[in-house]
Length: 405
Image (tube, rainbow, N blue to C red; front, side, top):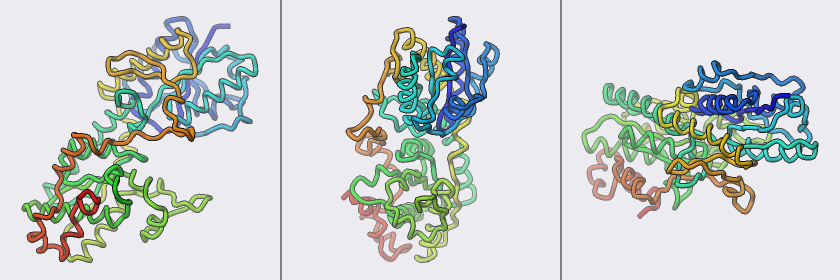
């Protein structure tokens, strides 16, 4: 029976997935392998009748520059009791290629160990993807999809900023980012937004809604002092990740709750929450400013990859074959800053608890500090002029809010 490889995709979409799939398929077909794409991730792979796509050159060639994923993705995380070897035996699978996050990678490690107990030697290479850019890759290299997502976010951000200027409005934007502020930081700094708020800024204080809203008010007032009647404030959704749940529950927002009683943040627009709380604050202090919410999230995940990600994903796809040919398995494919392919292992990332700590924005870097210093916010020298708009300017002093003084 012809040797084959299987490809699955886990988690959520990121630009460049099809580029990886296409490259892996082309590279292995060239070497005589049958390439089987499996829909629905692990759920499909371990089902009785997996839904598959057998690749030929023409399909692989058609998809490489497209956004989204030609293989339907799934967040299903199997238990050890769900494992079975049928698919691998029936198709003479020699390599499992997984595209996804760390959960997808660790599940593959468990699965290939199980297959060894069934006398099957199946190699595994994982291609990491996330638009959050929060995987601690060497040289602070970006995760694939991040630059394309940022590019699309900047396109939307520039349009929104033009609207703010044209209509003399303020927009409150929220950007995806789970626990790290890379995407929000990249979009806000590229678009010259007046205010950006990312979780990494709160390195010396706790995160509360009041602090976030006061930082936006600080920006609005500073702009008014400068004669600017418009602006955009971008907040990373990552602030919720570090916020005390009591703070979220006492925010006066109607949440739905999961089976454990936790608020389901995925069901609500973060920008609407911030905008609603901002409007309450503006009314309270008597500032007449029109604000509107804009959410940046799902719009970024399936757009066509830009040249940077097309190149990176092609390199990673070819890199899968290089590592497989070298007999390296159970690894993550990575490219360093010179473009050399190197294998990484989950243990290289994990902390003492077996968790992968997210790579955060280095808030003390020159780049971060320069961009933050370029934002619009109240400082001590603005207090006298700010009194025209707020009775207690020191409560809106950006650096005092963050305890940076």
